[in-house]
Image (cartoon, rainbow, N blue to C red):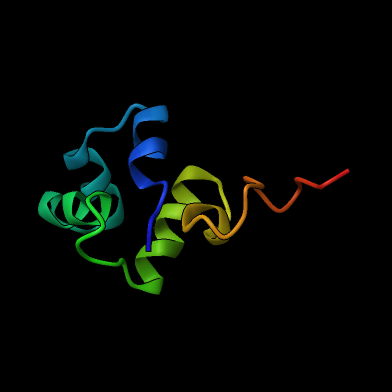
Length: 73
């Protein structure tokens, strides 16, 4: 599962350690998510989506619409 974790982390100015602390994971876990070596579980995806104010679909590249208020119009 390719994700936008690295892109969003950098956009919001977090380093891997700061992101890890914010979502209750290790820096190594964040690194593995970004390298697509490990998939985050649903609880972690929810935490990241809330932190970055995006939908889970956007986070996991199932949608290009950042939040639920975005529309195709």
